[in-house]
Length: 163
Image (cartoon, rainbow, N blue to C red; front, side):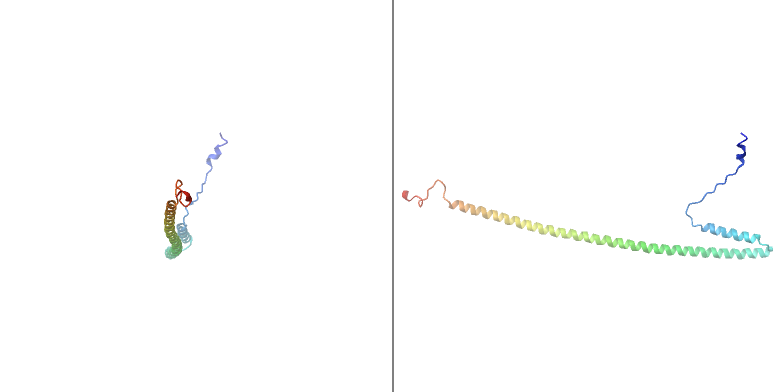
């Protein structure tokens, strides 16, 4: 048991990393403030001079922080503007493609309707011609049948002795 008692006093340090994807701007500002404060506190100056220096350094840090925030804000605004323009262009291009294809489909549908009407009229005309030809053939057949002698009768011209 005495062999493992030494390990109970060991300290364990756990380092965790934040993978939240933050910009680190807050950490930068905090680091600036702490660094400026530490530098001021460790400098060998009188109380009045130290307070004046702290005010001066605070104003400088505040000005730098504002400039940094303004710069980041401007960059973000420019990036958003460029992105918005790109998206607008892509949406416009997609809209043009859709409209062009819709017109092409509409034109194809219209051409199909015209072709169907033409085919219908040609078919109706062909049916009418076929009916007329059929009726003409039937009439011709009736006339031919009526003008031919029947099989049981003998024509006088064929048999001169019986007439």
